Image (tube, rainbow over all chains, first blue to last red; front, side, top):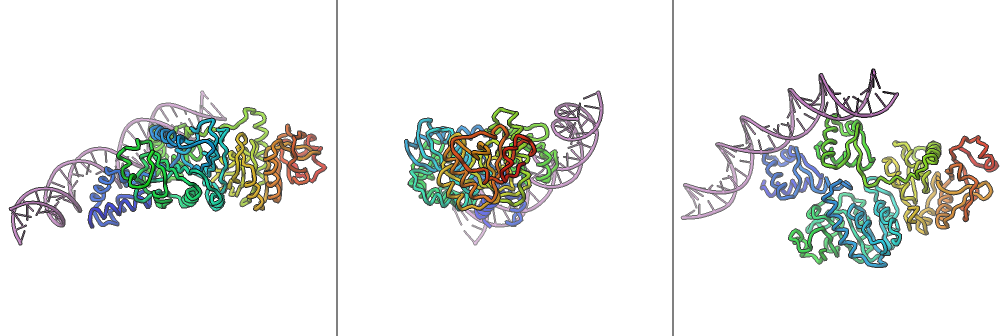
Length: 249
Length: 249
DNA sequence: CCATTTTTTGCAAGTTCTTGCTGTTTTCAA
DNA sequence: TTGAAAACAGCAAGAACTTGCAAAAAATGG
């Protein structure tokens, strides 16, 4: 078995299960534990996965809990939010998903900007209600306990009746090849409906989450119109996204 | 189980419940208390959570203490909530409106009681989501800025399709002659739809609000099945409600 | 095709990390 | 103040990691 094949297998396993044990890999690949260890070490250096004591985890795995108190990430998210509110204009009707980045957007909306916002996220709705000139319409349905996010047929049905100016997707994992991915099937359904309901789709992503892949696919990059990161639009890290018809902000 | 996985689990728990006990973590993770202690210590040093004697808490941004400061009123509301949760039984499907009294009910629901709850109140939905065994379905629609309560045709439409076991109305003004009254026309519409959708209607009211009347009428007392106050059911203050076919609790 | 170099792989010795246990000290609440 | 629970420090067994090395495999070059 070639080294490349092993690397690919390891990455697949990591993305599928969010984590792997070196012992399991050694057994299923029929190579010594040392070889696996070296493979994982390389992949770690290539930033393809995260090596931990006893195994490896995918990048997405550790970061999807809400506010991880990481002040560094937080400041990146605020930068993204600042760029995002610049895209908004008076009187627009928009859709917002959940996630901490979208929370920052909700907080940063100018106090006198009047908007109509549809959202299935409890936290975002709560934050938007602080703005007297923003009309907030909650897309009701079954709520997910951890994400505090509405999913299910009711949400999708309501979205099917909408045609809004813009859709702002906060969380999610982004990769130039695999597109936009998620780990929760129900959330995928809602996000796809959101994209269908909007004329333009805007993705917010901290650079750490670029090139990370999850189990299920939301959409291809061709369906996205704008990508907002905390980086300068000319940053080389974004090069792999340039072939697509994307506005980089 | 990898250390990283334990860390993630602990953070999830902390964010979810806002505080956890080391003993509980030790049991659910099947590791010794020392290991959990060490984990929490690391997470504390990483500023991911706050270690306290016996457990850990999140320094969460959601310290929304919607307590109205009035500790006296608060204790009455807790008494009402205690009586109200006694009315609930396993597997029921219920409707809950908003208000601080209903918030207390939401908090006091036993951890292992499984229910399905529909609500148009953001705060109540948020509180209910702390209970793993409660399925929460939000009745989406236009949100009122102060009350954080959904109103409008969408809510009424959704309610028209429901037939639930019980409806718990929190806020409101009550009078033996004028019935249940409100000052917000939109809220009236929703509450009427809620009463129509339920087999039984339960009203929660602190005694201060008895014999008070507002501009618009929600319903007559004849449509109400149970009235819960903080008073003893035999209290003379409730005499004027006895002529009606009401269960006083 | 063969000899040399480079890369890869497995192994062994030694080090570090993890974890549960012990005994002791500290903290908390009655 | 006192007793129980929690936190801490140190220790030991085992697992995981590192390093260096040598054999095997692959690539290179004449």
